[in-house]
Amino acid sequence: APAGAPGGSASAVKDEDEMLRDAEAYLSELHEIAAGNLKEQNYERSLRIFAALLRSHRIHHGELHPLVGTALHNMGVVYLRAECHSDALDCFGRAVRVRKGAIGRDHPDVAVSLVKVGICHLLLRSYDSALLTFREALSVRRHALGHLHPSTARVYNNIGCVHVEFAEMRQARRAFEAALDVQRNAMCEDPGNRALMFGAATTLCNLGYLYRHREMYGKAALVLNEAVSLQEVVLGPSHSTVLATLDSLADAHFQNDDCAGAIKSYESILGRFGNLDSSGGSADGREGQEQQQGSADDDGGDGEALVLRRRRSRAAAMVLYKMSRVHLRQNDLEAALNKLRAALGHVRGLGGNNVEALEAKLEADITRIAERHESSQLEWV
Image (tube, rainbow, N blue to C red; front, side, top):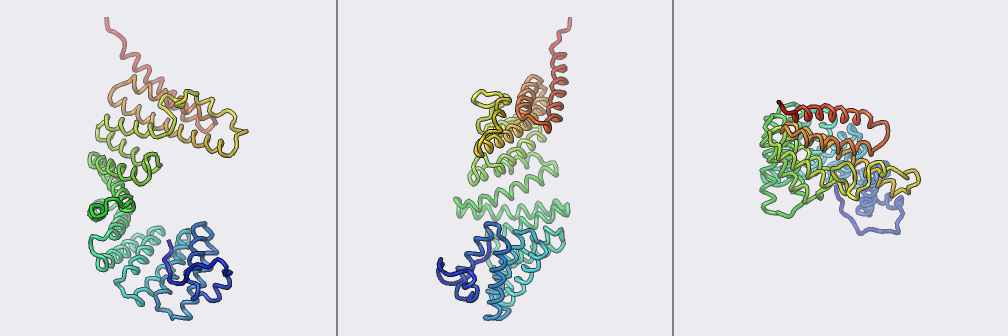
């Protein structure tokens, strides 16, 4: 979010253009309007206000003033949200220079702008510059706020991400583990802080990715399981981020030959898909084909519900297919067949031409495994 600015109370009666003509008197009001436009993705209007504030601050205070740095930073935020990364980099870079001159090189606000500079370099794939900038930001934050301040964890995470881009997995792991140490210490002091919990969950997911990449699947499962627990508190059990982490957890279990753990994670995902069950239909007993009838005359709400049901049904089919692979590893052909048939039921309920390839793949797998199952049941005489 844009950095705040001092000023008087909000005024509903003043015209925006009138306030801009005397911007110094209406800093809070103008900032509130600009921030509101940014939230609504009205980037041009938001940028117009922050640019006007920048001109006013330069006239009244000169170039090296905290308000000038704040305005430049806020313009960078707008450009970043609008995905104009080069323009954002320019604004954040100027904000860093102004803030260093106005409030000192080791002020926390300097680190805030430095982090944004690093993010822009990362988005522009200038990884060397991103790494240098994040390291400078980390140095400033550690000097200004202390080595265990939660904000240092975010910089460690960013540094880890750059090392991933360089395929420097050992360095990335060290950075993520340093971030996690800081976050765990902070959660001990403030256990109910959801922002800290979400940050720690993000770091744990990053570590899970690294451990899986290095084929350390047991460790991956441990950190991903912890990430799920934190994400559930912050986001709720059925959030897409939680489901994605559960899917990664199931794969880590599978790769670690923990088939029971994989099945448990996949079953947990299926149980969070609302009223869809694992038999290819819905929990109220309607078949998938019936779910698509009447959609042409549905109102907007019913149409959205139908789209959501189809999306969940497709996701359930994919989870059931993955479960069949686990059962095959267990040599439980009957369970694998049941999962594949359930997946096929979900796919057939979707309708449309874009699922024909998936339907054909499932049918071929069912035929192949059914033949194996049948041959395994033959009795030798």
